[in-house]
Length: 331
Image 1 (tube, one colour):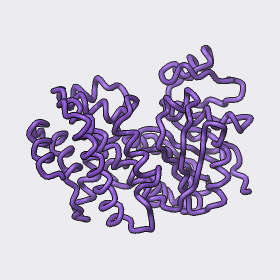
Image 2 (cartoon, rainbow, N blue to C red):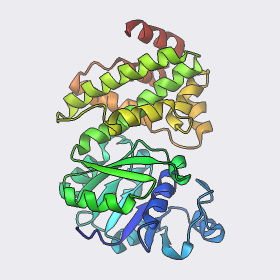
Image 3 (cartoon, rainbow, N blue to C red):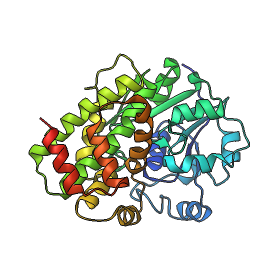
Image 4 (cartoon, rainbow, N blue to C red):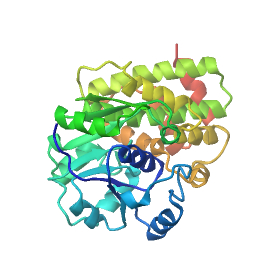
């Protein structure tokens, strides 16, 4: 088993908090980068994250909190990034320490805007992190259920299977089941696509389409996901594996899904701007829809659901009209 050294979580949100909870069940100590010093002080004072998953209490003595990105990167060997993809570039602009000799785990379910790269590609191409030092952590999972200790299945993608297995064992427990995959780019793209499809599901829910249509929508979304993945990153994969279809299902149907909630607001008549402001948390699918649209300009995959979401969010097409046209094309 490979030694992954000291581990740090980077990010202060709900998924970062859930990951920290999992890691502390197997590690004596972790580092934790949170950008705001006031949040760190509140965390230390109360013993829980003041803003997210406040029901999860931590042994503060086992956490080295730090708001200095360079310090946390320099002191730790394995870095688990769990922050919204739109913020990743700005965070890393502060970095003066090399990432290329670190083991990077991306738990970010999004694409880096402007770059139009999934996060493993971004770390590899921009920060020269070798493939064997890159991993991705994908669901199906909601941070709220991990916090509650509910049975959860996770997939760790990595070119180095031994490192993937080692990291998997650090997360595994009686309620966390893990497996590994070498389809790193494929499962990253799937994690972005399912957020867009969850917005579509939410829009339809907001428009009061019923469960019958939702079932057809999600089935078509799975087929669309498979077409896109087979074109963007051809590989041997089974779209019915939990990391693909399972993640799609939980994000499309769960009340914990911020992308579904965001879509529901749009379907109910909220403007995109109002929905973004009122959400308070980032709906990755909003940014993903535009990035995927740009990527698909080169791929030319038939993706009517993705196109419909883009048209509603960015072209200001009426959700009623767009979903009606989409529904008439489905079988």
